[in-house]
Length: 480
Image 1 (cartoon, one colour):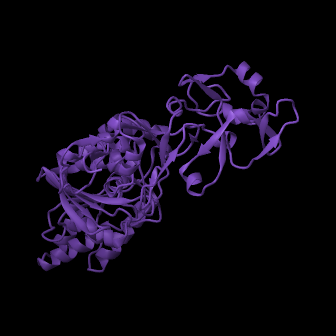
Image 2 (cartoon, rainbow, N blue to C red):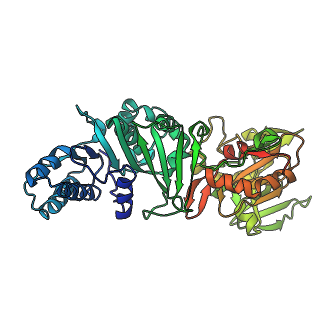
Image 3 (spheres, rainbow, N blue to C red):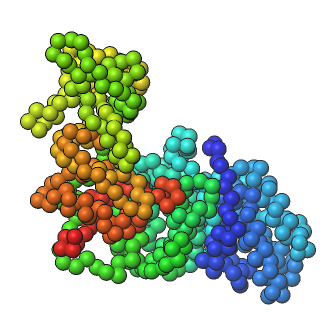
């Protein structure tokens, strides 16, 4: 059993879900299911719409009652919500003189149910539950029974989308309110491939908040009886719409109006530069020094030290630490760098050499020993090193730094070979083009539009992008 947080669909969105699949008239004999129905705030609208349509067609109350029992279905796992749903549906029916309806509302886990018939419509708002919030039993069941969840850290709603498509008959239609992260999340790749053949429309709420959470939402519309080569993309936030060829939707789904093709020489950013994630200490509180002061030792040689709290640390163990935030606020920070470069190659200390060369720094880090040992570090990492090693090899050169979060503009910072970025994405040269050229590309309006199309909502109008997104960006090298 997993504990689901019930988040109910706003009334205007309920109407939209029904409108986009044409659930408006001639409804008698059309089977519909809402397969995570909660207290029934979608089903109550469906039932009232069904009844009024039948009354307009002059069906008898007995016929309407029979239709409600045979045409309208729901499923809800939580018993309290299941009972509330039936009570709410009874109230709607009784307003029209319909009593004793034997509702086809099931107190079941829809992911474990088999039907001997198919539906004309599936509408709904599936549970938004992340992989980390699923218990192991649920993870195993979903992984074994749903194709779109075979790999990676899937969200629970992925299985609901697959199950809903399987419930449709050969001309069935589905409208589903989903987290728009499925368009970009790396673990949703199988879902995107499974969904694409049936997809007709996307209604993107983008920065419009339907719920009191950070999740951005979209409505997907699928039609098994009408396969198309282009989807219609409707941005409800910006009030624009256009067609997008399905063959253009590959890795992440980039909903861009490509009226203007790239002329001249098209270039991939990653062929000329390398965008990488920054170092990951996995314990910044130990390695990044935000409060410190310079002091001078009284020992011979005048070694420079840094003092932080009650500890002193050798200056030659330290480098300038930078992040997009610290650079934006012009804040000086330092970072312990327990490595050195020899002729451009990274060299790691043995524990014995590290303690001998940096006794004060070793003593400081030792005060975090338990926390350092508990990190989910790479296997070869020593307790006094960073938790991840993948970003270290190319740091000793001039580079650019950008934030992973884009809000209204992309701002890049040029940093030196001595600076160690611990947050954001850093860019280095691979070919003849300069970092100034890369800066111009990344701060262009075209790249901002690309980031807005490919990024995952972080909060409000902010979007999160990845190093891979930057490397995959195509630009016209002759126009920069």
